[in-house]
Image (tube, rainbow, N blue to C red; front, side):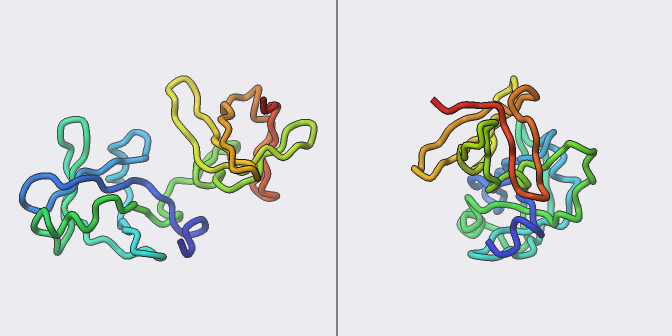
Length: 170
């Protein structure tokens, strides 16, 4: 999407409709999940760009969050937004401490091991509970999981767009 990596950061995804008044379930990617409500305004993906979202209200519901947008007053209207991602401007996010990164900043970066072998590019990251995991895809389109641990991730160089790891693919 245009400008996604530099201007926008995806913070959630809209799920199925909820109720009869146009509400939608929201899957937050922030930690903790409720922090998504701290970032406004929201943008909804619209083809190849982002469109300002007219968020009317958001509410905690059971273990999740539900949201209502202006102009979406029925389940049929709201269903048009199901599956769409929610983003905020990068400038809305807090500044990070040295050595901290937003996951989005790591996506697409090549991963090189200590022998200089290209292991692939970061496709996405997973939260597993014990540690995060980099999922990289190599030129053969094969995906590999690399644990995001201090003994494995040796250096993240955002300036030169490369991640150095102590890891061998089997």
